[in-house]
Structure formats: C-alpha cells, structure tokens
Image 1 (cartoon, helix red, strand yellow):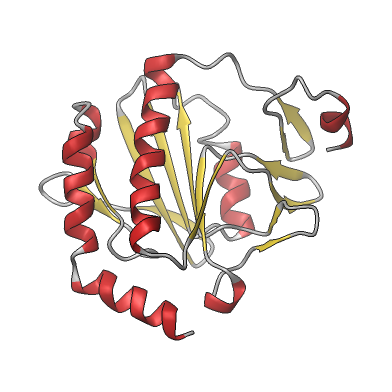
Image 2 (cartoon, rainbow, N blue to C red):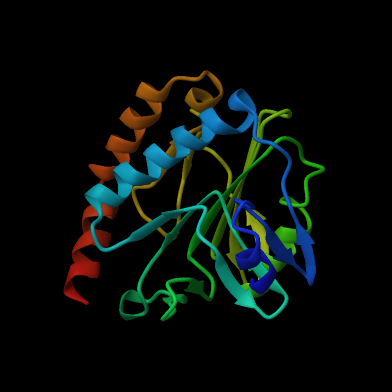
Amino acid sequence: ERRHNAHPEIKKAELIEGVVYMPSPVRHKKHGKPHIYISGWIAVYAAATPVVDPSDNATVRLDFENEVQPDILLRLEPEQGGHSRISEDDYIEGPPELVVEISASSVSYDLHTKRRVYARSGVQEYIAIQMYEKRIDWFVLREGVYEALAPDENGILRSEVFPGLWLDSVAFWADDLQKILAVLQDGLASESHADFANRLHEQ
C-alpha cells in the first residue's frame, strides 16, 4: 500500500499471498464493456435494495498478505450481518459478501490463487467471468469450500446471499443488456427479494 501510494500513476495493483500483481492493459470487448454491464446490473440491484453497499475497483484488505481490488463487489454493513467494515482511511477491511472478477481467460490468477484467498477469507459468493471461454462460474461458499451455483434451464443464475440478484447468462453472452436488466427486474419483483429487503430495513 505504501509503494502504491508512492506511485499515483498506478491505477490498479493487488497483493495476493504476498506477491504484487499489476494487470495488463484493459481491452474494450474483453473487459471494459462487460465491466459496464455488470456494474449496471449491480447498481440497479442496489437502487432497489438500499441497505446493500456496492463498489467498483475498491481496495479490500483481507489480511496482511492479501489486498485485492475486485472489479465489482457487494457488501452488507456489520449491523445487517456483513463481515466487512470501512476503515478510517476509507478502505474495505474484511470479506465482502460478493465479489465479481472479469478475466480474459481461466488461466488468470483470478480463477485460481484469488479463488483460494476469497474462500479462505470468507467471501460468500464469487463470480468469475471468463471472457475467452465465454463462461461464468458463480461460486457459493459452503462449509469453507466453493461450490458452483447451477443455472436454471433458461441459463439464469440466482444469488443465495442476495435474494433477487438474478443474472441471465445467455443474455450476457448475447450482448443483450436490455434482457439482463429485464431478468434482474423479475428477481427484484420476487417475494424472496421483498422479504430480504424488509428484513434488512428492520435490523
């Protein structure tokens, strides 16, 4: 963190298991555009669920050897049952409930080293979007181990931690943002989302 602050020209650097990683230049179709789609998807969910706290490329301090900067994250405050907090210097400390990483390929450190770190740290859901393979792995933490969340017959993935957060994987790969947001609206109209939002407001 000290080295990063000494070089403000560096926009993103991560400490993973004690090793500093700096990403390659960002491509439009393989990162920039899908990043906007997922950002919008999360933002719409947050607008309909005001107690949740989204962030984009924020530094997350998981432990002394791991400071990550996921593409997108969604968290709850401790009083709502969340496991992270905002430090005095405005960083996230502890595991967010959900993180999203957009990777060019499955060989990326996102899908292997970072997955182990996220599981060990207690990140409840980890979405790994692999652009070259056209694959979305949505992992759910169960008893300390990630298990892949299965889509339904229509290719829709549904969060277990954030009820109503539905992602149409078919629409995502078809570059159909309208359909992505329409399916999310179906999730937001579900009884499970209404119950979740009401429960958060009561806490």
